[in-house]
Length: 83
Image 1: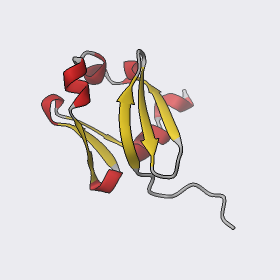
Image 2: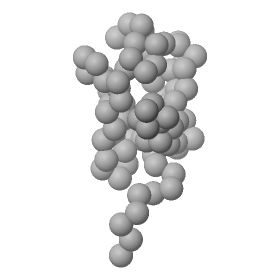
Image 3: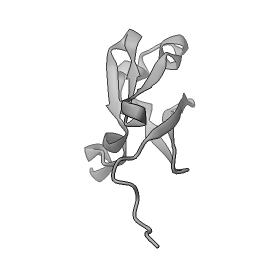
Image 4: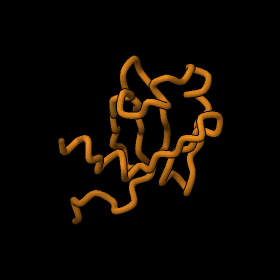
C-alpha cells in the first residue's frame, strides 16, 4: 500500500473565501492559499475570479479574463510556503 501523494496532483474545483484561494483536488485534499500571494486574483472582481477553467486535465487553473494561470503543483510546492 502506497501512502505517497500523487506526482501530478489534479484540481477538481476552485473557489474563494474572504482571504484564500481554495483548490479541491481529485484525491480529496484541499489546498488553502492566501489570495494575497496572487495580486491579479486579489484585485479581481468576484465575476472575474469565478471565470476559471481547469487546464491540462486539472494540472492547472486558467482565468481567461485575467490572463492568469496557476499550476496545482506550484500551489503545493510554493516557495512562499518555505519562507
